[in-house]
Length: 329
Ligand code: UDP
Image (tube, rainbow, N blue to C red; front, side, top):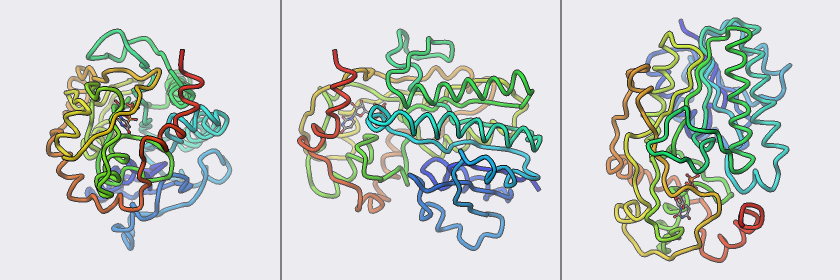
């Protein structure tokens, strides 16, 4: 039986990857320190003998290394996310996302892992010159989270080059879906808007709302991880997007409700849009869930966000103060 280590497996994307792997009856070892992941995300799998869940920090090599014994694949998703806290506290971001990745790579190398899939981030493109943006676009991280995810990706590729670890990095674009994080920090737009919808408050639209994002549904992303692990590819960096790009105003239209505007933030692209040629050609993968279907699926599960903080203009002003301070002109 195929044994898979999933770091960050109790997180938003990780828990969907775990669900998909359990559908095909693989043995799964989840490593998660629950810093942003939540055991509730895997609650529905409780009692499944194919799943073991270990509360452990990936940067603790001695603790994680034995858990890789006998594993075939590693899917490495554990990381700290979010822009503002990465600007305020760059060190933990480096520690978890870079040092943590080296620990996972070393454990994978020690146990002769057959496939290593890294959760890369499209934030490495910053504000790109070209849309759709291909994997060869210049690397322009705008804040420490993007930098750390990119440095870790370089380590992953380097372990492929030097140690012949069979590595792939999937650079994900604006992943959304059920179980997207609900921790306290001001973060991804879906969590912000859904909590506002539940509270009957206006959506805090950044700028004029015409900016677009390549919103990619989480179960499609989970499939991309599994297809990558099943492929023979190695040393490849592949964009994972939805095939389209959708405005914030369109999102508001689908969710329904009033809006209030907050200032455009420095360093933010007006568009994210993945060039998907590599994904289609190398992985034979393409997304199945349209933006409209994805938003509907989320709305069916909106209760998940009932404990999420409800942001308004003034709390956003406070939360993004350092963003403007450090990234502004
Ligand atoms: N956004 C918004 N209101 C918010 C938070 C975000 O209109 O309260 C917009 C933001 O300007 C961006 C999009 O939603 O265009 C996605 O933002 P998110 O932070 O989720 O992702 P990123 O900007 O990192 O792609």
